[in-house]
Image (cartoon, rainbow, N blue to C red; front, side, top):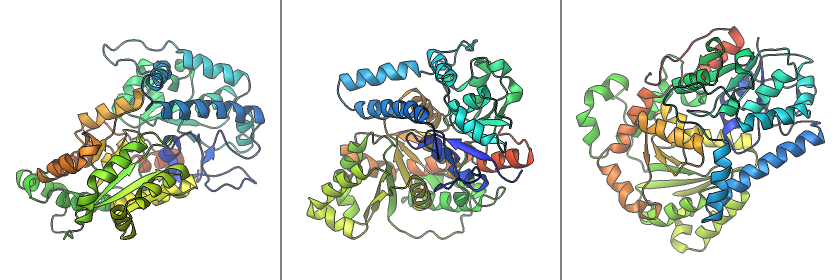
Length: 448
């Protein structure tokens, strides 16, 4: 095979961002013209109105509840109710978790009503391997008789029962697990072991380099170590480790630290960006930090941050000097490209623990904003386990704790831990599997 179908859903950023590094192997059905060869199951040419309405209702609920999360009492209650139905059960004690959840039954009800049938009929005209980053397209592809292989990429460090079909032991879906925990979880859900491949999570090739050498990732990781350890405390203590994995002969320029704060797809936690902006403005003015506020495709947030900056002379001056940037693009896939370029230059990423948690494998230290939902709580726990992320303190006092953490070298330690402990070759593994049938697995999370 030289190409595959890649199907995601246009809800937030997570499921489309997950497969974006594999865009170069994606193909569209004949006659389709889209900004990206990645197909959105909820928004594609000639999608039936009934399907579009079902997806739209789902997206509205997701985005509304995500935004409501910040509303005291009522918002928290509504979010808790939704999260309960999408919950991830405690892993221990290990036990049979194959009984389908209410969410699984709801999915099958929509599929019986025809959800996804039209898309599968279109793809069956030329059945290539199908890779999806969301459980619903994988399940409806199987239920509607897709003739090619079906691969489902899991997009978090642990997953709910909704990812597995009604009768997991009989399913032909092949699951691509980003880490060992997801594989173990799928086994508890009743998925056959031969249908699970631990590939790692796909990361942008522009940030990696050669599959074996990973020269780009290593060079950027070492740059971060040096910049985030200005007193040399971390490097002096762990000189042997740093020298073993990175080229310490590389000269690193003493440039400002690039701090990037990324808002989620539903616009949640935008207030944190405002607090960071106000708190760090004097440090930014001193030339020690550059701040990137990432609003993605949200024109509302772009206008909001722009207004805050324009209303204050000191912030407006920093913005004009490009010491503060707002990253926005109305086209989601173009936004991904711009964001990936930004991450190469970024020294610290501050964001909620979404699918971006896996980017710690690039040697990108993560300041963890409060998680939204069960899966993000699991991502946060995973970042703690591999010691590649650290919980934020109060954003309004970031001018204090951020500089303290910079001084003692703990950010530099996060760089090394993420690079050494998180899988980073997922893009290569998945491409080889889909195009060549080569099965190469990540044995555990502690691997380079």
